[in-house]
Amino acid sequence: MAKQTINIGTTANDGTGDPLRTAFTKINENFTELYGDDGDSNTLAANLDINGWNIVSTRSNEDIRILPAGTGGVIASAIRIAGSTISSEDSTQILVDDSIRATGNLTVDGATTLSTSLALASGATVTSILDEDAMGSDSATALATQQSIKAYVDSQVTAQDLDFQGDSGGALSVDLDSQTFTVAGGTGIDTAGSGQTLTINIDSTVATLTGSQTLSGKTLTAPTINGATMTGSVTVDSLTFDDNTISTNASNANLELVASGSGTVELQSNTNITGNASVSGTLTTADITTTGTHTVTGQSDVDYVRIKDNKITTNATNADLELAASGTGVIDIQNTMTTVGQTITGNVNITGQQDVDNIRIDGNTISTTNSNGGLTIEPNGSGAITLNATTISVPGIMALTTALVQDTLFINTGAKIQSNVTNEDLILEANGTGSVVVDQIAITDNKITTYVSNADLQLDTDGTGLIDILTPTQTTVGSAGGANALPATPTGYIKIKIAGTTRVIPFYDEA
Image 1 (cartoon, one colour):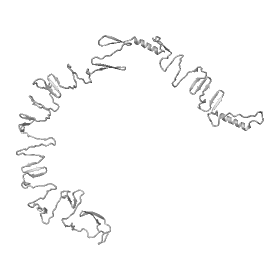
Image 2 (cartoon, rainbow, N blue to C red):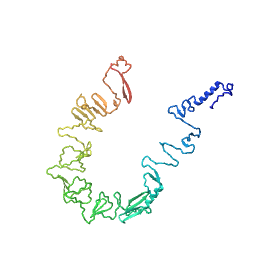
Image 3 (cartoon, rainbow, N blue to C red):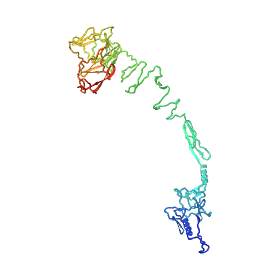
Image 4 (cartoon, one colour):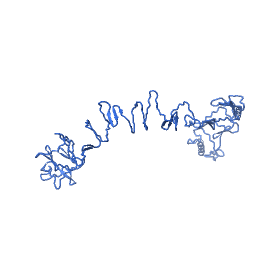
């Protein structure tokens, strides 16, 4: 808002000026413009105090900002501040009369003149920069120019030689300013340079500890060889080693293996002898496993057993000759064996069939070997034939030419088992808690059950016969009805099969 001026009239009290109310309204608006009425920072209000030569902010910790418009700056005396740039308003030098500390990086675009010295965080304090080619002043506080450093280094290198000496050729030198020092390879040595690195290598003609090389035409005097691998034929004196064969290269010479002192020659692995083996002295061996055919001319004594020709005997007086298998093994005699009056004590296990005269025992079957021959089991004297099996099965039809009578039991030729005593019961009785089993029916005490799990129990007659239950067990009906009537609701039901069809029969409580 522009400044408002009160019209006071041309002359005093001439009635041409602003009325009193209008005048005070303008005054109030001018004060509002100056101080503001809402704490606006653009006005003085109560936040900024101009007192004497001081401008003071009355709000705690509040900045005081002087903001020119557009590209204008703030000028204080001859110092101009525009944005973040400080310059001289009258183009004279800006003088900072006290120490300056910069917490960030300091960048100087123009020339820098230090009237005293330059001190960094550590090291010597620099007081000057000298241009001396010979570095004669030898100052501890002066820096050298690039030209001085180059001139001094050139003068030093030009005047220096590199002295060296080899195993032969005497003392030599290389002028570092004009000559090149060359490292040349010799026999078995290669050299290669790259960048700032000179590499010296052994070439392929030199044998190394870790490499694999072939030596030709070399003579080794008293060498020690550990873990050697030799390819091809190797000759040591009169012996030739070729692959897995050791032979002599002297005509008709023997190949001898001789141990030192009381030592022995030991063959640790399987050994095959394809030719003849001759032992002139005593041959003492540990366990020997041999494969193939062994021919022994004369007798062979193994501990107390002698083998000669086709006879095995004991060579100890009155000693038994025993044939024993190991563990669960058996003695297997695979050809015909003829014995004279032998007595066998203990168990004899025979795998396969055994023929004794006309009787053959094979597995669990006893049969005859002659055609249509009969099988007779006959005890000696008053001895009896005892069959201890629980079940005796006779396949097919058992034909008896005469009746079989045992005490009071009569087995007829008509496939009947009868009591041999008149009016006597025929009793089939199992031992202990066992059952009498007929085909798939088990009879235990007074109970008949099926002998096959989950099988039906069937009662059937032959032809037109009926199942006849002879004894009536009750003459009246259940208690829920009268003598001539059935109860209304049965107690339960029995499920049975009649002629293959499942039926349900009700039953009632006893009257």
